[in-house]
Length: 356
Image 1 (tube, rainbow, N blue to C red):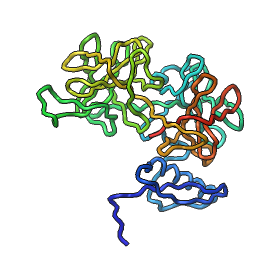
Image 2 (cartoon, one colour):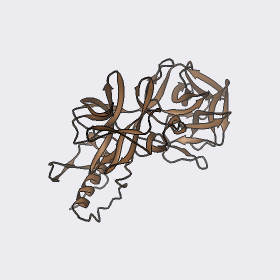
Image 3 (cartoon, rainbow, N blue to C red):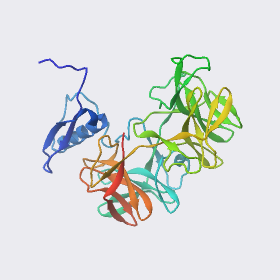
Image 4 (cartoon, rainbow, N blue to C red):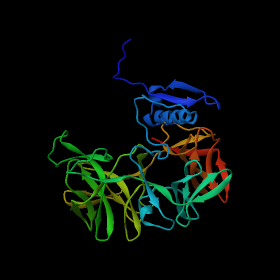
């Protein structure tokens, strides 16, 4: 029987009983997600291994269960308690007592468990066996920045598109990606045009171009959302800092197209560069994590894997508790978003899940 491989249906594997019985379910087109299918395969492989069955000739190579990926290109940065430097790039996913909370993960018991971290904590706080446990060393969730090689970077996050010059025809455009440069004791986010050799950012009313820069890699859990200068979105992606104040990655429309730039809480808008000058646009968008509303233990299609407990995959979630926003984890076997808080384990029935 012939099969058209031009369209490959995504198959999700999921357990249908606690006795390890598995069922195959084909997702509808609007539900298909490679990461979700890979999650099911990881669970099946772990189940087979636990039963002493060798799984071979599956035709796929999956990441190690001890190192689950968060999105396709997001990175985890190892952090020592009290160390501030890696937190400059970490994504704040909650807040408590006026301080940002970050998603963290640490090796504990029989898995890599997802939890929460605050700058005054001594480690990653995870919920385990009904208690809140502090674990070090640990890692925090951060976007991935990479060096462009000879003006090219596969997988760069596309933030906009701009004409090469005012006289360019509509089709003579190039994509624009977030980049960043160390300059005069600060780190400045800016714009990098595909196949270009410099990162351009605004400084003192003019455009500064540098050949030494890094570019933000794409990740399915990041999206763009309208921003307001005086009320920047909680959890916006940090691209740099100046004088201890973070710069967030932003983008704004201009006469030549959409450009990527930088904005901070004390700025009147998104700073972009055009024709050698710095422009500040009051109408802009911020790069932020993509969250999906969920409840009752449900895990949305496209949820991003952050860790595992035994063979149970953990997905990052967050929810409101006692006037705070708390990050934690949810899995197919939990009734909600589980967090470690005030020495105990708390399960939130209504929450959001980091998703593609």
